[in-house]
Image (tube, rainbow, N blue to C red; front, side, top):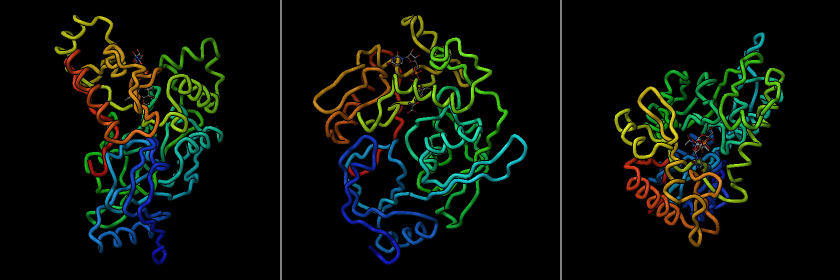
Length: 343
Ligand code: EPU
Protein backbone atom coordinates (compact mmCIF):
# COMPACT_ATOMS: atom_id res chain seq x y z
CA UNK A 1 0.00 0.00 0.00
CA UNK A 2 1.10 3.55 -0.67
CA UNK A 3 -0.93 6.19 1.18
CA UNK A 4 -4.43 6.02 -0.20
CA UNK A 5 -3.27 4.23 -3.35
CA UNK A 6 -3.43 0.47 -3.56
CA UNK A 7 -0.10 -0.55 -5.12
CA UNK A 8 1.08 -4.16 -5.51
CA UNK A 9 4.66 -4.79 -6.49
CA UNK A 10 5.68 -7.56 -8.93
CA UNK A 11 2.07 -8.42 -9.59
CA UNK A 12 1.11 -11.54 -11.51
CA UNK A 13 -1.12 -10.53 -14.43
CA UNK A 14 -2.27 -14.00 -15.45
CA UNK A 15 -5.74 -13.54 -14.02
CA UNK A 16 -5.99 -10.06 -15.48
CA UNK A 17 -5.72 -10.97 -19.17
CA UNK A 18 -8.11 -13.33 -20.95
CA UNK A 19 -5.24 -15.03 -22.82
CA UNK A 20 -3.97 -16.05 -19.35
CA UNK A 21 -0.41 -15.05 -20.16
CA UNK A 22 1.77 -15.20 -17.07
CA UNK A 23 3.38 -11.76 -17.34
CA UNK A 24 4.25 -9.59 -14.36
CA UNK A 25 3.82 -5.90 -13.68
CA UNK A 26 6.50 -4.02 -11.75
CA UNK A 27 3.57 -2.27 -10.03
CA UNK A 28 -0.16 -2.83 -10.22
CA UNK A 29 -2.35 0.03 -9.02
CA UNK A 30 -6.05 -0.25 -8.39
CA UNK A 31 -7.98 2.71 -9.80
CA UNK A 32 -11.44 3.15 -8.27
CA UNK A 33 -12.06 6.73 -9.37
CA UNK A 34 -10.57 9.81 -10.93
CA UNK A 35 -8.73 10.76 -7.72
CA UNK A 36 -6.90 7.43 -7.68
CA UNK A 37 -6.09 7.97 -11.32
CA UNK A 38 -4.51 11.41 -10.90
CA UNK A 39 -2.64 10.23 -7.80
CA UNK A 40 -1.38 7.12 -9.62
CA UNK A 41 -0.23 9.13 -12.62
CA UNK A 42 1.68 11.53 -10.35
CA UNK A 43 3.13 8.56 -8.45
CA UNK A 44 4.33 6.94 -11.67
CA UNK A 45 5.66 10.20 -13.06
CA UNK A 46 7.69 10.87 -9.91
CA UNK A 47 9.35 7.48 -10.45
CA UNK A 48 9.69 7.93 -14.23
CA UNK A 49 7.64 4.82 -14.83
CA UNK A 50 5.74 3.93 -17.97
CA UNK A 51 2.06 3.34 -17.41
CA UNK A 52 -0.39 0.90 -18.93
CA UNK A 53 -4.16 1.24 -18.61
CA UNK A 54 -5.79 -2.14 -18.07
CA UNK A 55 -9.51 -2.88 -18.17
CA UNK A 56 -10.73 -6.46 -18.58
CA UNK A 57 -7.53 -7.51 -20.38
CA UNK A 58 -9.54 -9.07 -23.18
CA UNK A 59 -7.90 -7.30 -26.10
CA UNK A 60 -4.21 -7.39 -25.43
CA UNK A 61 -1.22 -9.69 -25.56
CA UNK A 62 1.53 -9.44 -22.95
CA UNK A 63 4.67 -10.05 -24.99
CA UNK A 64 6.61 -10.01 -21.73
CA UNK A 65 6.64 -8.37 -18.32
CA UNK A 66 5.57 -4.75 -17.97
CA UNK A 67 8.33 -2.78 -16.26
CA UNK A 68 6.15 0.10 -15.15
CA UNK A 69 2.85 0.82 -13.44
CA UNK A 70 -0.27 -0.98 -14.62
CA UNK A 71 -3.36 1.09 -13.82
CA UNK A 72 -6.17 -1.39 -13.26
CA UNK A 73 -9.36 0.50 -13.94
CA UNK A 74 -12.11 -0.51 -11.54
CA UNK A 75 -14.28 2.59 -11.73
CA UNK A 76 -17.77 1.31 -10.96
CA UNK A 77 -21.22 2.77 -11.32
CA UNK A 78 -24.17 2.62 -13.63
CA UNK A 79 -27.23 4.79 -13.64
CA UNK A 80 -29.90 6.19 -15.90
CA UNK A 81 -29.80 9.81 -16.90
CA UNK A 82 -32.37 11.74 -18.91
CA UNK A 83 -35.16 9.22 -19.09
CA UNK A 84 -37.47 10.76 -21.64
CA UNK A 85 -40.45 8.86 -23.00
CA UNK A 86 -39.05 5.75 -24.67
CA UNK A 87 -35.49 7.03 -24.62
CA UNK A 88 -32.92 6.98 -21.85
CA UNK A 89 -29.22 7.54 -21.40
CA UNK A 90 -27.30 4.82 -19.58
CA UNK A 91 -24.15 6.03 -17.82
CA UNK A 92 -21.47 3.41 -17.18
CA UNK A 93 -18.26 3.67 -15.14
CA UNK A 94 -15.25 2.52 -17.16
CA UNK A 95 -14.66 -0.47 -14.90
CA UNK A 96 -18.17 -1.91 -15.22
CA UNK A 97 -18.28 -5.34 -16.81
CA UNK A 98 -19.62 -4.86 -20.33
CA UNK A 99 -21.77 -7.99 -20.52
CA UNK A 100 -23.39 -7.26 -17.15
CA UNK A 101 -24.25 -3.78 -18.43
CA UNK A 102 -25.84 -5.28 -21.56
CA UNK A 103 -27.99 -7.60 -19.45
CA UNK A 104 -28.93 -4.74 -17.11
CA UNK A 105 -30.11 -2.59 -20.02
CA UNK A 106 -31.94 -5.47 -21.69
CA UNK A 107 -33.66 -6.54 -18.46
CA UNK A 108 -34.83 -2.96 -18.05
CA UNK A 109 -36.47 -3.25 -21.48
CA UNK A 110 -34.04 -0.89 -23.24
CA UNK A 111 -32.78 -1.73 -26.70
CA UNK A 112 -29.60 -0.81 -28.51
CA UNK A 113 -26.79 -2.99 -27.13
CA UNK A 114 -28.43 -6.43 -26.80
CA UNK A 115 -26.48 -7.74 -29.84
CA UNK A 116 -23.27 -6.96 -27.95
CA UNK A 117 -23.97 -9.51 -25.21
CA UNK A 118 -21.10 -11.68 -23.97
CA UNK A 119 -18.34 -9.52 -25.37
CA UNK A 120 -15.62 -9.84 -22.74
CA UNK A 121 -14.07 -6.77 -21.15
CA UNK A 122 -15.07 -3.56 -19.47
CA UNK A 123 -17.32 -0.69 -20.54
CA UNK A 124 -14.31 1.63 -20.68
CA UNK A 125 -12.63 -0.56 -23.29
CA UNK A 126 -15.72 -0.67 -25.50
CA UNK A 127 -15.15 2.65 -27.31
CA UNK A 128 -11.42 2.00 -27.78
CA UNK A 129 -11.98 -0.64 -30.43
CA UNK A 130 -15.61 0.31 -31.05
CA UNK A 131 -16.78 -3.19 -30.16
CA UNK A 132 -19.15 -4.74 -32.63
CA UNK A 133 -21.04 -7.97 -33.23
CA UNK A 134 -24.09 -9.25 -35.08
CA UNK A 135 -24.67 -6.09 -37.06
CA UNK A 136 -24.33 -3.61 -34.17
CA UNK A 137 -21.42 -1.44 -33.09
CA UNK A 138 -20.97 0.52 -29.90
CA UNK A 139 -20.94 3.68 -32.03
CA UNK A 140 -24.63 3.12 -32.89
CA UNK A 141 -25.64 4.12 -29.35
CA UNK A 142 -22.65 6.01 -27.97
CA UNK A 143 -23.46 9.57 -26.89
CA UNK A 144 -20.18 10.60 -25.27
CA UNK A 145 -17.05 9.47 -23.48
CA UNK A 146 -15.66 11.19 -20.40
CA UNK A 147 -11.92 10.79 -20.05
CA UNK A 148 -8.82 12.19 -18.43
CA UNK A 149 -6.78 13.90 -21.13
CA UNK A 150 -3.14 13.33 -20.26
CA UNK A 151 -2.03 16.18 -22.51
CA UNK A 152 -4.16 18.92 -20.93
CA UNK A 153 -4.45 17.01 -17.61
CA UNK A 154 -8.13 17.89 -17.47
CA UNK A 155 -11.27 15.77 -17.55
CA UNK A 156 -12.97 16.10 -20.95
CA UNK A 157 -16.24 14.87 -22.39
CA UNK A 158 -15.93 13.88 -26.03
CA UNK A 159 -19.10 13.61 -28.09
CA UNK A 160 -19.37 10.34 -30.03
CA UNK A 161 -18.84 12.29 -33.25
CA UNK A 162 -15.42 13.38 -31.99
CA UNK A 163 -14.30 9.86 -31.09
CA UNK A 164 -13.39 8.97 -34.73
CA UNK A 165 -15.17 5.65 -34.47
CA UNK A 166 -14.56 3.21 -37.29
CA UNK A 167 -14.46 -0.56 -37.72
CA UNK A 168 -12.53 -1.70 -34.61
CA UNK A 169 -11.01 1.77 -34.53
CA UNK A 170 -11.26 5.08 -32.65
CA UNK A 171 -9.45 8.21 -31.54
CA UNK A 172 -8.41 6.26 -28.44
CA UNK A 173 -6.61 3.72 -30.61
CA UNK A 174 -5.13 6.37 -32.87
CA UNK A 175 -3.73 8.43 -30.00
CA UNK A 176 -2.81 5.64 -27.60
CA UNK A 177 -2.12 6.74 -24.06
CA UNK A 178 -3.62 10.19 -24.41
CA UNK A 179 -7.09 9.59 -22.99
CA UNK A 180 -7.95 7.42 -20.03
CA UNK A 181 -11.64 6.65 -20.17
CA UNK A 182 -13.63 7.22 -16.99
CA UNK A 183 -17.25 6.93 -18.07
CA UNK A 184 -19.49 6.53 -21.11
CA UNK A 185 -23.03 7.46 -22.02
CA UNK A 186 -25.24 5.35 -24.26
CA UNK A 187 -28.53 6.37 -25.80
CA UNK A 188 -30.96 3.47 -25.54
CA UNK A 189 -34.63 3.20 -26.28
CA UNK A 190 -37.63 1.01 -25.55
CA UNK A 191 -38.86 1.34 -29.13
CA UNK A 192 -35.73 1.13 -31.29
CA UNK A 193 -36.05 -1.61 -33.94
CA UNK A 194 -34.17 -4.79 -33.04
CA UNK A 195 -31.36 -5.74 -35.43
CA UNK A 196 -31.77 -9.36 -36.33
CA UNK A 197 -30.46 -9.59 -39.87
CA UNK A 198 -27.03 -11.11 -39.15
CA UNK A 199 -27.10 -14.58 -40.65
CA UNK A 200 -26.06 -16.59 -37.57
CA UNK A 201 -28.77 -14.83 -35.57
CA UNK A 202 -31.43 -15.47 -38.20
CA UNK A 203 -30.45 -19.15 -38.41
CA UNK A 204 -30.76 -19.42 -34.64
CA UNK A 205 -34.11 -17.64 -34.42
CA UNK A 206 -35.63 -19.69 -37.26
CA UNK A 207 -39.42 -19.26 -37.25
CA UNK A 208 -39.58 -17.23 -34.04
CA UNK A 209 -41.97 -14.29 -34.25
CA UNK A 210 -39.31 -11.61 -34.19
CA UNK A 211 -41.85 -8.85 -33.57
CA UNK A 212 -42.62 -10.34 -30.18
CA UNK A 213 -38.98 -10.53 -29.03
CA UNK A 214 -37.73 -8.57 -26.03
CA UNK A 215 -34.19 -7.16 -25.93
CA UNK A 216 -33.39 -9.74 -23.25
CA UNK A 217 -34.47 -12.55 -25.57
CA UNK A 218 -32.24 -11.13 -28.30
CA UNK A 219 -29.32 -10.94 -25.84
CA UNK A 220 -30.00 -14.58 -24.94
CA UNK A 221 -30.06 -15.57 -28.64
CA UNK A 222 -26.73 -13.78 -29.17
CA UNK A 223 -25.30 -15.58 -26.14
CA UNK A 224 -26.40 -18.95 -27.54
CA UNK A 225 -24.89 -18.17 -30.95
CA UNK A 226 -21.63 -17.03 -29.37
CA UNK A 227 -21.48 -20.12 -27.14
CA UNK A 228 -21.64 -22.28 -30.26
CA UNK A 229 -18.66 -20.71 -31.98
CA UNK A 230 -16.63 -18.59 -29.62
CA UNK A 231 -14.66 -20.12 -26.76
CA UNK A 232 -15.25 -19.01 -23.17
CA UNK A 233 -11.98 -17.37 -22.05
CA UNK A 234 -12.42 -18.94 -18.61
CA UNK A 235 -12.16 -22.39 -20.24
CA UNK A 236 -9.99 -21.75 -23.31
CA UNK A 237 -8.01 -18.54 -22.78
CA UNK A 238 -8.32 -16.24 -25.82
CA UNK A 239 -8.61 -12.61 -26.88
CA UNK A 240 -11.57 -12.88 -29.24
CA UNK A 241 -10.93 -12.19 -32.91
CA UNK A 242 -7.17 -12.03 -33.26
CA UNK A 243 -7.24 -10.22 -36.61
CA UNK A 244 -9.46 -7.58 -38.17
CA UNK A 245 -11.45 -8.47 -41.25
CA UNK A 246 -9.25 -6.90 -43.96
CA UNK A 247 -10.65 -4.39 -46.43
CA UNK A 248 -9.22 -4.51 -49.98
CA UNK A 249 -10.04 -2.48 -53.08
CA UNK A 250 -12.50 -3.61 -55.74
CA UNK A 251 -9.86 -4.48 -58.35
CA UNK A 252 -7.83 -6.59 -55.94
CA UNK A 253 -11.06 -8.25 -54.80
CA UNK A 254 -12.11 -9.22 -58.33
CA UNK A 255 -8.71 -10.80 -58.95
CA UNK A 256 -8.97 -12.70 -55.67
CA UNK A 257 -12.52 -13.86 -56.37
CA UNK A 258 -11.46 -15.22 -59.77
CA UNK A 259 -8.93 -17.44 -58.06
CA UNK A 260 -11.12 -18.25 -55.04
CA UNK A 261 -14.81 -18.06 -55.99
CA UNK A 262 -15.88 -19.14 -52.48
CA UNK A 263 -14.28 -16.16 -50.73
CA UNK A 264 -16.61 -14.74 -48.04
CA UNK A 265 -16.96 -10.95 -48.30
CA UNK A 266 -19.11 -7.92 -47.52
CA UNK A 267 -19.12 -4.79 -49.69
CA UNK A 268 -18.21 -1.71 -47.63
CA UNK A 269 -17.71 1.97 -48.46
CA UNK A 270 -13.94 1.70 -48.92
CA UNK A 271 -14.00 -1.49 -51.01
CA UNK A 272 -14.63 -5.06 -49.98
CA UNK A 273 -14.28 -6.50 -46.49
CA UNK A 274 -13.10 -10.12 -46.42
CA UNK A 275 -13.92 -12.64 -43.70
CA UNK A 276 -10.47 -13.17 -42.15
CA UNK A 277 -11.85 -16.33 -40.52
CA UNK A 278 -12.52 -17.79 -43.98
CA UNK A 279 -9.00 -16.94 -45.20
CA UNK A 280 -7.38 -18.53 -42.13
CA UNK A 281 -9.69 -21.51 -42.29
CA UNK A 282 -8.98 -22.10 -46.00
CA UNK A 283 -5.26 -21.76 -45.38
CA UNK A 284 -5.66 -24.84 -43.18
CA UNK A 285 -5.27 -23.40 -39.70
CA UNK A 286 -8.61 -24.12 -38.08
CA UNK A 287 -8.12 -26.44 -35.11
CA UNK A 288 -4.32 -26.30 -35.44
CA UNK A 289 -2.51 -26.81 -32.17
CA UNK A 290 1.16 -26.96 -31.27
CA UNK A 291 2.12 -27.82 -27.71
CA UNK A 292 0.67 -24.79 -25.97
CA UNK A 293 -1.12 -22.46 -28.38
CA UNK A 294 -3.48 -22.98 -31.28
CA UNK A 295 -6.41 -21.87 -33.42
CA UNK A 296 -9.96 -22.49 -32.27
CA UNK A 297 -11.67 -25.40 -33.99
CA UNK A 298 -15.00 -23.59 -34.40
CA UNK A 299 -13.85 -20.05 -35.29
CA UNK A 300 -10.55 -19.70 -37.14
CA UNK A 301 -10.18 -16.05 -36.13
CA UNK A 302 -9.57 -16.94 -32.49
CA UNK A 303 -6.17 -17.89 -31.10
CA UNK A 304 -6.19 -20.04 -28.00
CA UNK A 305 -3.66 -20.33 -25.22
CA UNK A 306 -4.23 -23.99 -24.36
CA UNK A 307 -1.76 -24.52 -21.55
CA UNK A 308 0.35 -21.74 -20.20
CA UNK A 309 1.79 -20.45 -23.48
CA UNK A 310 3.78 -17.23 -23.38
CA UNK A 311 2.98 -14.04 -25.24
CA UNK A 312 5.95 -14.79 -27.50
CA UNK A 313 4.40 -18.15 -28.46
CA UNK A 314 1.02 -16.54 -29.17
CA UNK A 315 2.66 -13.86 -31.32
CA UNK A 316 4.83 -16.40 -33.16
CA UNK A 317 1.72 -18.36 -34.13
CA UNK A 318 -0.01 -15.13 -35.20
CA UNK A 319 2.98 -14.34 -37.44
CA UNK A 320 2.85 -17.78 -39.02
CA UNK A 321 -0.86 -17.38 -39.72
CA UNK A 322 -0.32 -13.94 -41.26
CA UNK A 323 2.52 -15.21 -43.46
CA UNK A 324 0.49 -18.14 -44.62
CA UNK A 325 -2.58 -16.02 -45.48
CA UNK A 326 -0.29 -13.56 -47.30
CA UNK A 327 1.30 -16.39 -49.32
CA UNK A 328 -1.98 -18.10 -50.16
CA UNK A 329 -4.21 -15.09 -50.86
CA UNK A 330 -1.87 -12.08 -51.08
CA UNK A 331 -3.91 -10.45 -48.30
CA UNK A 332 -2.35 -8.70 -45.31
CA UNK A 333 -3.95 -9.40 -41.92
CA UNK A 334 -3.78 -6.79 -39.21
CA UNK A 335 -3.76 -7.86 -35.57
CA UNK A 336 -6.71 -6.78 -33.47
CA UNK A 337 -5.38 -6.89 -29.88
CA UNK A 338 -2.66 -4.54 -28.73
CA UNK A 339 0.77 -5.86 -27.78
CA UNK A 340 2.32 -4.67 -24.53
CA UNK A 341 5.31 -5.53 -22.36
CA UNK A 342 8.93 -6.23 -23.21
CA UNK A 343 9.40 -8.62 -26.14
N1 EPU B 1 -15.86 -18.56 -41.44
C1 EPU B 1 -15.08 -19.58 -41.89
N2 EPU B 1 -14.40 -20.33 -40.96
C2 EPU B 1 -14.49 -20.09 -39.62
C3 EPU B 1 -15.34 -19.06 -39.19
C4 EPU B 1 -16.01 -18.28 -40.10
O1 EPU B 1 -14.95 -19.81 -43.08
O2 EPU B 1 -13.83 -20.79 -38.85
C5 EPU B 1 -16.58 -17.71 -42.43
C6 EPU B 1 -18.04 -18.04 -42.53
O3 EPU B 1 -18.40 -18.01 -43.88
C7 EPU B 1 -18.71 -16.89 -41.82
C8 EPU B 1 -17.74 -15.77 -42.03
O4 EPU B 1 -16.44 -16.37 -42.06
O5 EPU B 1 -19.94 -16.60 -42.38
C9 EPU B 1 -17.78 -14.72 -40.92
O6 EPU B 1 -17.69 -15.37 -39.66
P1 EPU B 1 -18.47 -14.83 -38.38
O7 EPU B 1 -19.88 -14.58 -38.71
O8 EPU B 1 -18.16 -15.74 -37.24
O9 EPU B 1 -17.84 -13.38 -38.14
P2 EPU B 1 -16.36 -12.83 -38.21
O10 EPU B 1 -16.29 -11.83 -39.31
O11 EPU B 1 -15.35 -13.92 -38.21
C10 EPU B 1 -16.87 -10.79 -36.67
C11 EPU B 1 -16.25 -10.11 -35.49
C12 EPU B 1 -16.58 -10.85 -34.21
C13 EPU B 1 -18.09 -10.87 -34.06
C14 EPU B 1 -18.71 -11.57 -35.28
C15 EPU B 1 -20.21 -11.54 -35.27
C16 EPU B 1 -14.22 -9.07 -36.34
C17 EPU B 1 -12.72 -9.07 -36.36
N3 EPU B 1 -14.79 -10.06 -35.66
O12 EPU B 1 -16.26 -12.07 -36.79
O13 EPU B 1 -16.04 -10.12 -33.14
O14 EPU B 1 -18.48 -11.55 -32.89
O15 EPU B 1 -18.27 -10.88 -36.49
O16 EPU B 1 -20.65 -10.27 -35.56
O17 EPU B 1 -14.82 -8.17 -36.90
C18 EPU B 1 -14.15 -9.90 -31.69
O18 EPU B 1 -13.97 -8.79 -32.19
O19 EPU B 1 -13.41 -10.35 -30.78
C19 EPU B 1 -15.23 -10.75 -32.20
C20 EPU B 1 -15.41 -11.99 -31.79
